Image (cartoon, rainbow, N blue to C red; front, side, top):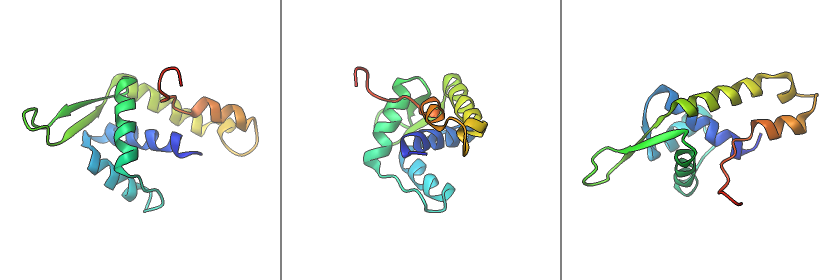
Length: 116
């Protein structure tokens, strides 16, 4: 599975537990994967913006006047997408054998820019 699928899924997973801000998401991603996956701010912040644009998460400034930290929460749409992808990952088509090409296309979170 590619990071384009894993990173968004991990973000949605974390935000189902509690609201988080970007640097904490980066740290928790390393903890969840036991250091196997690392993500840089140059990856996570554009990802958070795309997830927000898609309506899967919503961000709010901790202190709107200083814009110190932006906390993100999962939306009902994001929760539905998380469950959909999680269910597809658990399906026989997503495992070994079966039509793996179709499964890859089905489970990818489409976060491309419009027109890309």
